[in-house]
Image 1 (cartoon, each protein chain N blue to C red):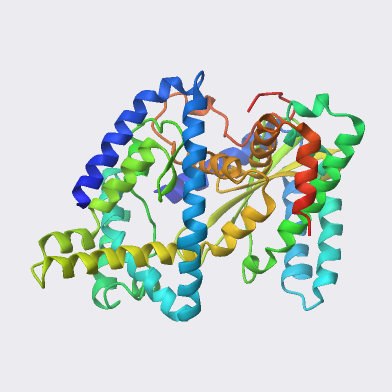
Image 2: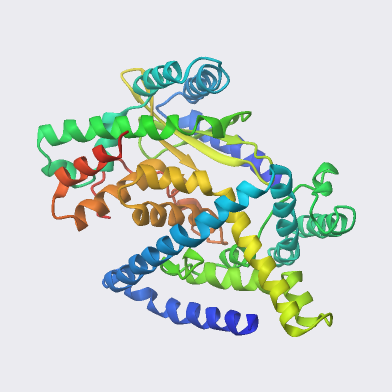
Length: 198
Length: 255
């Protein structure tokens, strides 16, 4: 019964999406398929050195993630009051920290794969959610949604939602909460984030 | 003793749900308490749970840890079965009963999950999910001593699920040995359950702590967002609601 609903739901979703969405669902799904395939083949299942993996990941990350866009959201209202230098410094350290954090977790994805479940429209006209799930060793599969934004025909990931937890939203809560409490504001945040880099 | 604890947490939860209206204006008192309790838990974890979890990993093989994991997962099965019924999912409830029977017997007291191989896949649920389905509000985020991140509904859910634990009833009605022997056995097993869960999360929590400048803020945000997926109660206006993750990137909302 639940399955029937799920199928019906996804059919309705795809239908409503093709009817009025600005972003091509098929194209967005292909983009994420390609991205996850590259990630799995080049990083997780490949036998190259750690340094090479890191280099490949950095390239993939910089090309396919719109970090300028995410960084702006993550700083919330503090982005507006930040100077050009603070903005650039923040994006730089945020990029490096993300690459460091995610490269440390490649092994968790060993032997895992993504199943594609179609797309879901967003309130934002230039964005779309690509729905995937990762089968787990036990219990229900984990839900992973990719928020994809299209800018001038180029697709980029702007958020990843794992089990309903948005990484952008979580980072925003962390950073704006930090700035609110700290007396050193954005500069303090940048310094503390730099200290997290190895 | 356990009964006292359950009643206590229920009272606490009811008490706290009363403070829910204070969420918007006076969140700071609760936030201050939460951060203090989070700090206490972190210290306790650094000095007790984490070292014990590491030690547990050092002296066991993955095979043994899996047996321990499956044993405790099996004890959760009655709570799952009851709550699938309360949620109206009789097929899932039946599967859960089947899992419990098969795994407790053929699976040697649950230490082997043979039922999964028979197509009776694990599909865990609990009182928290049932209450969510019944539209019981979640209440504010609260950090419990030792148990960590929670909400009033989540706390009630944990207490209810604990009351359906066969180990709890076995301890209650068992007549073997002296009182102290039964209690040591019961608390020893409960502690092992704790250590087992902590061991499974060693890397995850280490990674999270390594990359975060405000671990409390990160965990609070992720915990609340994750819980929103439970809120699927029969809301008439459901189709007008947008998913929590479909926020507007340009919106300048305050945290």
